[in-house]
Length: 313
Length: 313
Image (cartoon, rainbow over all chains, first blue to last red):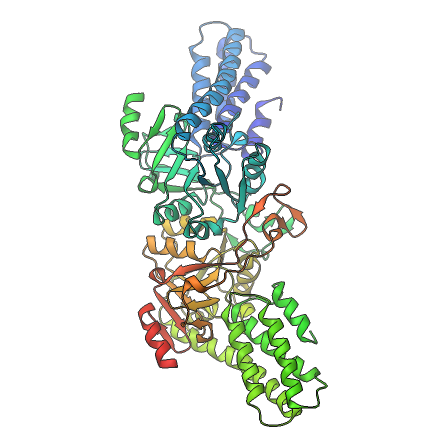
């Protein structure tokens, strides 16, 4: 993709997806704007970057990494005291830095999180929070990868994650590539596998973590309630760039996507014409269902979270 | 279908599905065996019927109506004191009687259950327990139909019900035909709609009701736990032929179906080659999550159930 518009479309159409990856892709989109710019003055190039930033912020409303990354890039541009060219250079370097940081962050997260996993554990995950949702390595799958690299014989149950099947298409694929044992189930089978005590832990990613809740792929809340009911630890693995602790769940906008994602499977229609559809892309898991949050700075209990927020700022 | 083998295949392949419909279809399959029989003696025709009965019982292990219907037909044949011809006649008549009874049962169930629904209620249902799962009218959808016919402006949220999408393909279709408002969601959206207080009640069917649990389509247990967590009444609508109160949940065999149902969508592959899959067709909802059971004799609380069992026998 050679310009910001293409990246913005790819984010909107979920060709690029996963909160951390969306953030870094948006940063590179702004780098492309700076790289392609014919502006003569610093003021002009910043204006172009701000315009691109505004376009990117309209693509998807829920994941907070997008806004975090875009704001960081715009700040970097504005802070630069040089010419149009030095602004562009600084912005491009910042995007590259964010990409490297993302991988580093995931490895740290994986190290912290892997301490929670025992040899032989079966981990249920929902959607895809792996290398295909990040620059590399993954958040939830990063934790599993570190445990696996440490020689712990963990295995994974992956929910297919309707409507877009990220679990079947991405998570199952990624884990197969790494030879980590994976079993695919439909979203409706979570209760069954937990009742049969086939699951030791749940680890999911997050699109936004607010004061009182975790916002993640639709279906996460149901998994969390079932985990709670079965006394199975429910972990969220996400970088601190996902944190939005100034806000609470009631303030979050949940993206509603095209009904076709539910009524069609590729070109194949699977529901009668004209049927009413709901298609929220995310749901809200209140903190009471969350055992801990795994981030690059360590493992936080929901109670630690606000303390951590204060410490970070 | 002109012989028992074809009916047995159709049941196995889920071309005929829904516990009550499977029962009546199996009865007609035995009627076909009797009708096609060239047996000269009563003993011979009964032997043929018993052979067909054994074939039918091997098709699907979980729904109890199948066994109930087959046993009732075999008993009818054995009880007959006449010739091979009168046995065949009695068996054919019994199948027709069972079909009529099923519709009558559903209408009675609907009448009892509709008293639980208020004007304006939104009812969530899982899978298909409608006219396409019975001879006509439906169990869970029968209750909704009676309420609708009484002028109550109810509406329905239907889960698509992976892997076989009975909710999207059958329930949404049936309700559209009756002009009852229906909204389709994926299975992972149940928590979301309940958290948003978009659901007033849940009504599902059942494949088997044992002393301590309801066995129904995979995903039902998750819906029940979420309903419980949100204080939403969870009703099961099923004829007494679904009752198997001599047994408990631990004794029930849960059918495991072909992994292709999960990894393929028609001809379209949706998961990587060789991925491990679980595909249980049903799950087990312990009675603690069930508000009431709606059957043709009335509305029973889980506590009433054992009393009812004694009264029936």
